[in-house]
Length: 245
Image 1 (cartoon, rainbow, N blue to C red):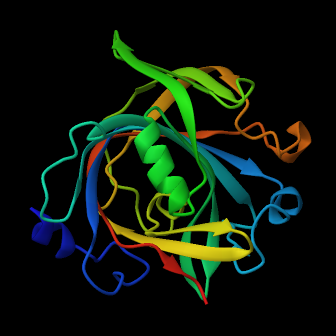
Image 2 (image 1 turned 120 degrees about the horizontal axis):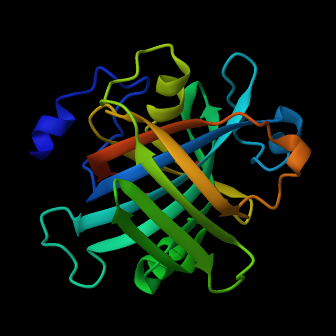
């Protein structure tokens, strides 16, 4: 299974990371809520080591609720307690030395052990009370941080089309096909390489009741447009964290 994933690399705009992958997990019922934002407002929230990436001159952020399952280290069975949990991340799009990737502003998770482990590894994880239910074709998702209950998300989403593969050069492909993740801690920038087969997504619709995950952006920094995608699942391979020189 893993070698089959590694053999499919033609969709990547960047090379596979060096060395063996360290961890694998499955991402399920993934919702992508993409929104254009002011380049001027968001630039100040990105480390100087990274270049803000834009599509036709526009910067974007995405809010992405999902379920993580079958988390395991290479050649080991799944961890009993943390093999399945909900996660919600807020990201924008960056480049470093020509390589496109993702910069995480925050990641919320419903189990404390993944949060503690990820924070030790520099990722900005937060422990949150989270729930996802499926009723009548809709996924109902909610999240509220334990450390600050004003930071929350509540909404419903569902796919509304047959699944499709975003074509190279399109906005959807630009947003989705990224395989390096960056974060910052105490002035240092770290990167994680990932790999999976190309995204197969559906168009989606959503009803958002609450979204307070981006307090660093004023309302006038964000546009009124949204681009919504749903993906059923992807098996993901993850490489070790590395400090950027």
